[in-house]
Amino acid sequence: FTEATGIPIVWDTTDESVSYAKLNQEMSSNQRPSADASFNAQQRAYTNAARGWTIPINPELVPNLGKVTAETAAPPDHTDGPWNYVNPYTLTVPFIVRTDLVDPATLKTWDDLFTPELRDSLAVDTIYSSTAFGFAQSMGVDPAENPPAGMDPVWGKISELRPNLAQLGSNADVVTALTNGSVKVAISNTGSGIQAQNAGAPVALVAPAEGIYVVGDAYYIHKGIPDENAYYAQVFANYLLDPEVQSIVAEKLGLIPVNPDATVPAYMADNKAVFPRSAEDLQAVKAIVAPVPLMAKNDEAWQKAFDAATGR
Image (cartoon, rainbow, N blue to C red; front, side, top):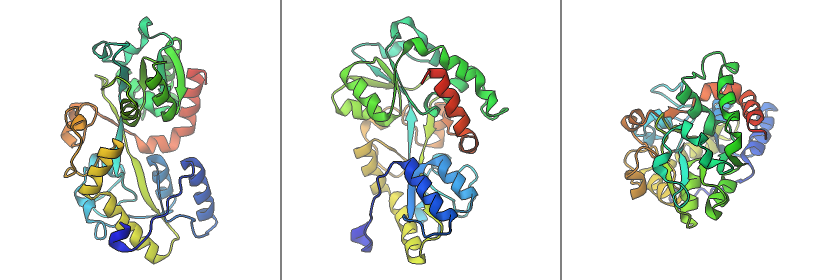
């Protein structure tokens, strides 16, 4: 990008929740944001767009916007015009199975996680959404009905999983546990599984039969930045969606491209149940696309309920 435009990119790798709070404080005080754009959880982008704190991504400046898979790349309230943000890639949350300790064929559904053979052998992401929406779909619970309390049956179900829980942790914690074999199965995003494989762990990624959770991180441009910066933030959005860039990100980081013209590694192409890309793929695997508006409104309550259910 810098070679093509002459514009340097400065990355701030502060924890995303910390940087989000800092930037929001600046924008709410009508200060110039200390960054031009963000990668962050999609519900945060959605919330800031609702507050009027984002600059819409313009398809005239970002022609690749018209080429991506809208089902995974677009905001839930998108139109044919500008989008409030874009998801340059997606992740899914499969069962990540140590094949030397468990036969992956024995783990097909969420109910299979309750088997006594997995006692003290399961690692789970600390973020509620990794498990909650998969369990909800398997139980016939609609998160949109009477939120946040409508998810109470899900928290009850998750609490019954506690005898099998060995660890609640971050992605890095999950990768370590899978690599050293201290757990047999993990519920975490595909990136964790790929990192564990790269570290030499014998793991398989299995899509739950009831449907796999699909979520994208968002790229969005902050309101209140100089016009020149805003222009190049748009150009950078187009760069992120370029097929060549998307192909490199898929190869190096294991993130699922949203541009259908991108090339993916063989392990992605051969496992569409875990790495769905097209609208047809999503339908075939009963994909649970992140309910972003619901998450934006209920994140705090649902995270607290998940923490209580898991004894965190």
